[in-house]
Length: 264
Ligand SMILES: NC(=O)c1ccc[n+]([C@@H]2O[C@H](COP(=O)([O-])OP(=O)(O)OC[C@H]3O[C@@H](n4cnc5c(N)ncnc54)[C@H](OP(=O)(O)O)[C@@H]3O)[C@@H](O)[C@H]2O)c1
Image (cartoon, rainbow, N blue to C red; front, side, top):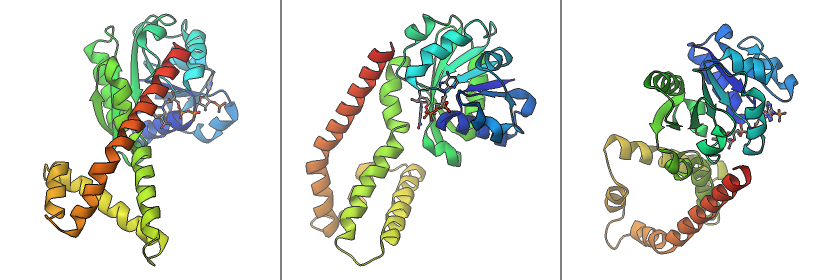
């Protein structure tokens, strides 16, 4: 199996290095191109460097890792180079299969990894158009599983799915940034120690819930005893935070629709 990466930015770089480090794909099976060719000097020992068309024609699976505004131009450029039977994968969730198929005719998929791929714990979303056979689906799933779990969703759920796994590290980080900033006003514990204490507790709470199959309510009930101190805090969250969460998803989903309209 040969894999190609077009666009060596944040996502393309992550995919290329993860595929290489996993050891399944050697230098002869990995292809890469980028608009600014100089950025590819660092990968000359792990991948074949080429033009977008060369990468497309050499690969069984071609990952197009460019921003939505550049996607159509790249698809136009490579459409005659993709081998029949090869799979073209867009890393963008907002550009529809309908739009992609107006340019490129063959098998296509969409893939959304999350930042946690960096530590092999991505929750990677994938969706396939109805031209993709089981064999090709299995090939792509196997490649993606080198850096975490793979979750298949229908196309209409890729937007909200992306909010839940790809955007979520940003949401989680910003929420806990606010909490740590507030905590700093009430203590002389050093800032970096506050952050480490909260992060370790956050990470362990997630693991606890997953390992013991606990719900959020289970955790709240176990910690926030009736009339106790924790309950004072959880009451504030349940009273005040729903409005913020609704606003957050309202804004992000609107931005997603706007991106789809601009690039559709
Ligand atoms: N970042 C995330 O966490 C994340 C997560 C999931 C999905 N995505 C999606 O993944 C896609 C890529 O995002 P990104 O964050 O990786 O973007 P990025 O860091 O801006 O990288 C885009 C890359 O595409 C290259 N490029 C642009 N036009 C090109 C062309 N015509 N031919 C070849 N290469 C070209 C750019 O080259 P230059 O070096 O010349 O700029 C750059 O290296 C987007 O659709 C994004 O929505 C991102």
